[in-house]
Length: 237
Image (cartoon, rainbow, N blue to C red; front, side, top):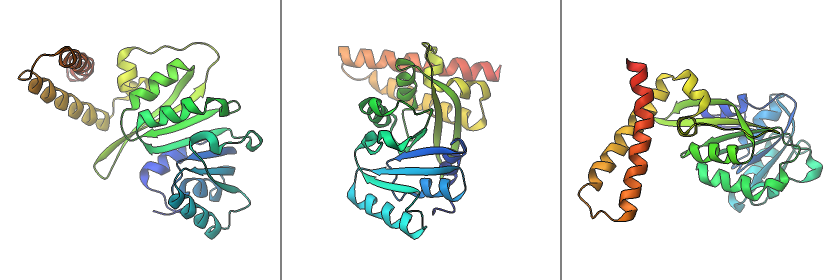
């Protein structure tokens, strides 16, 4: 993978960036994504934010190598601290982290989001936490995508700010409102796998001491299994 040829996962993230956007890529690593966006005329300008010095230095070298110093600024900063008001950022990308970490970055950097029209988020796990955050903060989920790369399944969530409160069902929060509409083969694979894993955990809990914590965790998993099975069985009937 390089700035000209992204992985399938990052190519799909790039696909959801509006043409002409000013992008902040948070946790940019080698800055491949912002470089790709500028090189392909999708973004006019970009900020690459990285909190770890090693990747920060790698990103700086990559931007220099691509001759994009005038269009991409690489900043050593934690989360959305990389975004400055004068940047005029209209889209934020955060890819390759856990859902709870992405939520933490968004929550801690909420004061940097005015003016941002779109969030393109690719959690490696726990996408539900992002949907919970979106509902709590009035961001609507306008697009979702599920894909498979190197035997791992990933989700991409595209959020846009709403002025009025939004709501999602428990099923939509867990499985994704847009993904539930499409129910692709990869969607079925993911949720069959998740449900089977949860069933094994519930079965193993039966033989452990039934503390309040165990009982609550078991009930939570049983409810998730029921939500998933309802969708999968409906499709198979």
